[in-house]
Length: 294
Ligand code: NAD
Image 1 (spheres, rainbow, N blue to C red):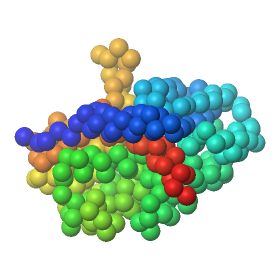
Image 2 (image 1 turned 90 degrees about the vertical axis):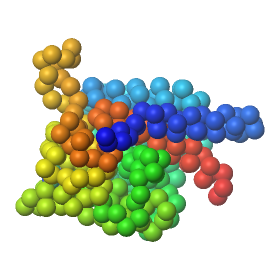
Image 3 (image 1 turned 135 degrees about the horizontal axis):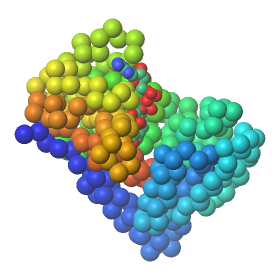
């Protein structure tokens, strides 16, 4: 029987720890952390993510500002909102919900966020710190994956981690985190991507498989070895006429078939997903603490 890594429960634990720290700050007469979120356009998934982030801030006592702008907002206006937030002392973290409309240069926007408020961890300065292995903002989904592994006591030292996917928000940062020489990492990491003639050559060698390909149910039982730990990052909508919404969410891993072979596995939903918002709030708290220690 595989251990089911319960992301909901672990995220609730992390959120509770943050809530305690925030209330201790307030009791000590200190300022509460502040998070500013910009949403451009009306993509339903983005709307729902932003709603979830705002709600989590309220629950944890974190101050939040959410700016919603229409699809046709100019790049100039987006940059000016960020500039304003960069200078606002009550705001410790700035998050621009991605993807942005096509007429806005995403890289330019990411670069405009002050590295001191980069709670999404997408600024090159944050990524550089992560690669070198010095403190900084770690992107939320990869940070959440590390928490899931560490809190589930999955050994990492010397283990072979195979990461499927090389995106800037998941694949690259999680791979770079897990080979670092520290007690929460120290694994041997392989990154596999679309240029691999056959990804199975790699996934079958994994002690820990991190699937972040964005392809529904790509990984089957034959693609992994006995005793593997599987972290399924995928959030994919597939048609399901029996569901009230007409679709359901599945991961990149065929959970039913892989489960009997696995040592541990994350479900979708309820695995990596809930960790992402928890780590965003953790980064916001980290930001205010770092600014006080400067
Ligand atoms: P992406 O599309 O930017 O990157 C996918 C990567 O997978 C690419 O680098 C590609 O090379 C690789 N890939 C795709 N098919 C492959 C194959 N057959 N063999 C080998 N490599 C392959 O996606 P992303 O933004 O990294 O997200 C990946 C998945 O994770 C998506 O389903 C996304 O919705 C989900 N996601 C979840 C969370 C969360 O909070 N749980 C956060 C971010 C992304």
